[in-house]
Image (tube, rainbow, N blue to C red; front, side, top):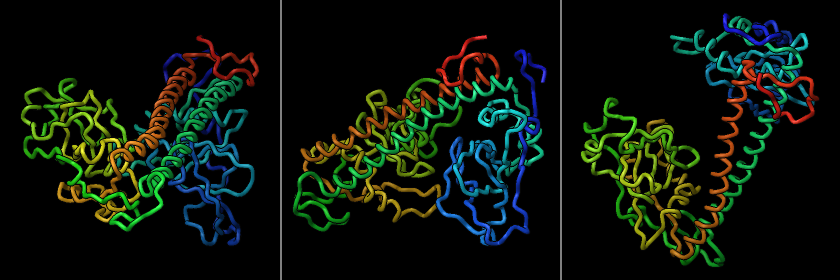
Length: 431
């Protein structure tokens, strides 16, 4: 590579800085040898879900071959663009990874944590993309991994860069742990409040299970004044009619698993096209329901800024009857276990499973009095708000790490190696 590099740095192949697949189980391995197996599904970017149970070699999958030691890096060679790469740590026990991974073990004084971050860099991504281009099943092999090139700093700089990025990873994991704890709390509160309410002692049977005596079970069509999807047929906007600005047009991709609208994914159409699609103009406080596709069942409330926007055919808007329910309560009820059970009854297992208006309007919900709805929704929404704030913090911290990686792994910003690695890891100086 011809780009100018910092003094003392060099381009190195991964095989120069790490052993690749150093240890593998042989066919002659003791059939009773027990280990914990790390398969492809167990790894995502920076994270390994370690199994709790061991398996015997004689009963293990044929791909269970790559032996792991604490400090190794697992790098998925199957669909490597998904970056199922992680730094492996363990106190004890035998671990074996699938042959769908390359296992990298730092050598010659190089830092394993630095190598882990280096393989997440844009430079490695570009090399991998060039290797898998045109393939129907993107994958690379061990030889490809060995020849991938990284920009290698001095050993001391590697350690300091790794310490800085690891510190940010620790913050990210702490935020994720807080979010997961709140999600568990939300799930418990929803199960309790959406089926038992507040302070009730008498209950009755209903189509959604036992509910307080003073509650009623309603079909969705009985608690809304309008249910409509964005199915425009031949009038659906073509790609050439999608603009960089104009009237917002929402597709299912904007409603994420966090049950929020991602404004960054909005598309836009002209005012003229907007008027042509008048049958599915949404209003603030409408509840959006994803009726098909990978995000099926995701929901969101329309904010003020999207009043009178348009939706595509994969979204359905639910306009509530304010005499019966509130948008916030329905939004929360659409995330309940009893609603998810109703969804699963109609789920064909296909990613394109479709919930049409006829099905949607007959979903059943347990409805308290308006006063109790507001109290329940307020309690649960306080948890949702905390989750949303932490999700924003997580997003910003992840972006901070991306920026740090770009600066530190390219040498654009040089770290101070004369300081102790135990000092503030976030301090670094511009070259």
